Image: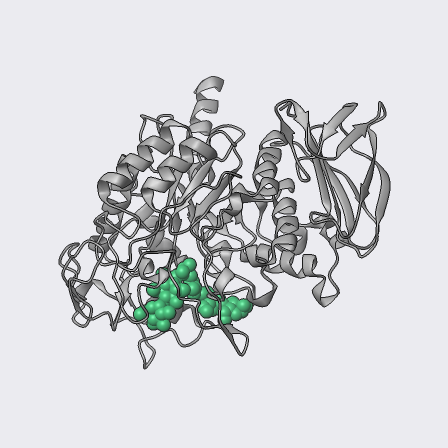
Length: 515
Ligand code: AAO
């Protein structure tokens, strides 16, 4: 073999092995946003009017397939996590609306990542009838889902060894993977038939144009079974993606340590969600357990997180923001907006992991003994249950109880910061031994935080070319004028920063992209 051929073969092999780790976003687009429970028509509009012009790489969508419709409680958000079939009608819209959304988002270079619920179907007590988003008949009691079709042969009941048929202990990998998670009927992915049906569903989404998948409940499937499904997946649609592009795979595995199932079990299949990230960052920003921002100097693998090139990171997700799943009280959300902006700002400036921004809806929280008893409440909706549209206020924020964190100026501008500094090294770290820190990204960007209880006035090496920079946190460039604090970087790269500890946003970020 010639040298060239050898290199080509090596590249081809690497391409096949590594592709599912690549988010497939356009060059220098470094973040996606989870538009939790948004309707397809609203997402299509958001791609065109906001996400594309502001440098967002893609959207994680709620599960697009046919799901149960529940009455008690009334239409909770989590009904989307109880599949009835793989038809494409859901609370977010019809199949036509779905196809239109994918097409329009792809056309403006914002790609779609589908939440794939493939571990299970609906809960055991889901009843029988046509109460699904597509009006499909099913019978949970007899495990009959004729629209796929799946029958009781396709479920794990025989393999599960617990008395209740439920996962009773997370200390036993067998029951975590072969028994029911909160009574959800557990599919047997060892069977070729089941693998084939799941692959058929995912391939349909790929043909329509999605760029990848969040794989729900991955901890509850055997990595080898998942691989057998992913090996059947087609390359992405060449209308929008280079030939032979593989779908991006990121698996939801909650590994905070202390359980036999590890995130690393899944690295062979694709990336994995790093749940330690948001949980730990919450402790640091809140200054709980003696944590301080100075300790963030070796954030990432230094905090025993998974390798950066395997991680998908986020401050909060749809579970952790309402007490489902892990994380607990430390996780920051839009409800704590000041600390939340610090956390998201830090995440987007720091090179570790592939980043996902959360975009939520507001719900009436009701705490009883520290637990929100309204954690089930679904998206803003009308009395007939249809989801309210996302309205846009004159100041660019959202109405109808859509929080739209991704439209908060500080967060939107930090997505652009991350794009600008993409590929640049983590550099010029500084801290005061407490909660004042700063770091740069090569010669492209610099960020500085004051999370202490006293004023900050420091002169630091930024690594940036000399010039006047407009802070993208306290304001931004608008019609050629800076509405924010201006920072003067001298010929030697040094600049003076003053941040009051009582500022609404006690941080400053500057970068080199002319606006
Ligand atoms: C609903 C009802 C159930 C009912 C069921 C069926 O709430 O009462 O039985 O319907 O009728 C979502 C909702 C569920 C909902 C479900 C179906 O959250 O409430 O059930 O839809 O509609 C585990 C999984 C993880 C999962 C997470 C919620 O491993 O995959 O639970 N997340 C995904 C989705 C989620 C969805 C599903 C999966 C199902 O994001 O929205 O559920 O499709 C430990 C384990 C974790 C485990 C948690 C569960 O975590 O490690 O793997 O997550 O327990 O609580 C400390 C520990 C930490 C521990 C944590 C929690 O932080 O360090 O390890 O405590 O105690």
